[in-house]
Amino acid sequence: MAYETKKIKEGITIHTIETEKFKTNLIAVFLTVPLKRETVTNYALIPAVLKRGTNFLKTQEEINIKLEEMYDASFDCGIDKVGDNQVIKCYLEALNDEFTLNNEQILKQSLDLIFEIIFNPLIENSSFKEEYVKTEKENMKKLILSKIDNKDKYALESCIEEMYKGKDYGIYKFGYIEDLEHITAKNLYDAYLELINKAKIDIFVSEILKEIEENQNLNKLNPRIPNIVKNTEETEIKEAVEPKEIKDIKEVSQGKVVIGLDIAYNKKDSRYQMALYNVILGESATSKLFQNVREKASLAYSARSNYIRQKNNIYIRCGIEIEKYEEALKIIKEQLEDMKNGNFSEEDLNNAKKYMLAGIRTVQDEQDSEVTYYFGQEISGTFTTFDEYMNKINGVSKDEIIEVANSIKINTIYFLRN
Image (cartoon, rainbow, N blue to C red):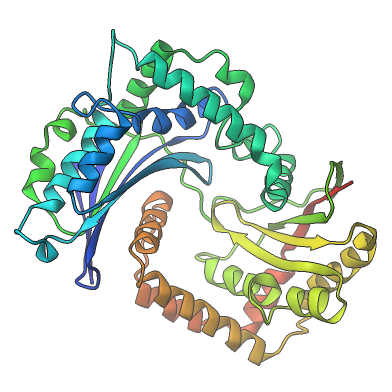
């Protein structure tokens, strides 16, 4: 597999991931802007409206017919939050040209279609189509209101909002209902024009085609100097704060505990140590949280942790019986202390390394995971090959994990209960 990048205009980059492993080609286009309270709702709504129609394919039905003609290709577009950035992500997956019946140029058609949807939307009187905006505003409102339906995600989002109150990372990626009320077809189109003229644009394809640079919709874009935020473990070293404990009362049958941890480990390129610490603590089925909180003490239905590199945080997440909160919290804190005191074995570390190496190999077996990996490198301003990544993982020592453990402090304990 070969990976190359080419800047076609300032702020617009093509990423080529050449491989012969797949029968389909995945094209991904990412538009990245800083996450801001005043723009988040507009930008979250835009991809939903883009999917509804273009100047040539004026309805979602026409787009779907075109996709069916391309050997039942699939398209989707949505929103993500990556560090302090909001990202509009669009994917189109279609059959590789060599597997078509009549040597159709499906890859070229795919590129033309995805650029058409993103950069040539349906416009009426210098606005988005009123009907589409109205419908998608209602859909977005329902999506925001349904946030509470997934209690696990709701608890995590709420803990993040508490930890980053008043800061960009605390903003909900889909925006806010009160902002939807002020959105019109006209001002949403104005926001779209601002987005496509300012966003960092990254295009991921399986091979470089001259048609990309010649594409009319792509060619009309202006160069730009993107003002994205580059978050890494080195930019996000945390200062110790007084831990907060939040008890949120809702109608729930199962308690949800989320503990937000700050990492103050300040060694260069330290994500490998932090990632391995997280695996030993709570990411895998052999982790300390899973084994001690869930299996041995039977205090949790689920017990795990995840590491967010862009913000130097680890989030411990447990689903528990509400009356067992204090007992569960006590054992969770004991696991943190055990890590500080080196109460884990070389075998634990080796198992964590095997777990991570297996995960890296799996990334290379899935096109969307591969794209996500390289986009993460691009957005952080770093680049590490898969082989380099695995070598770095293998080089981490137990002493380094203990150093990481002793740099970790509890920021917020969030408990969702009835």
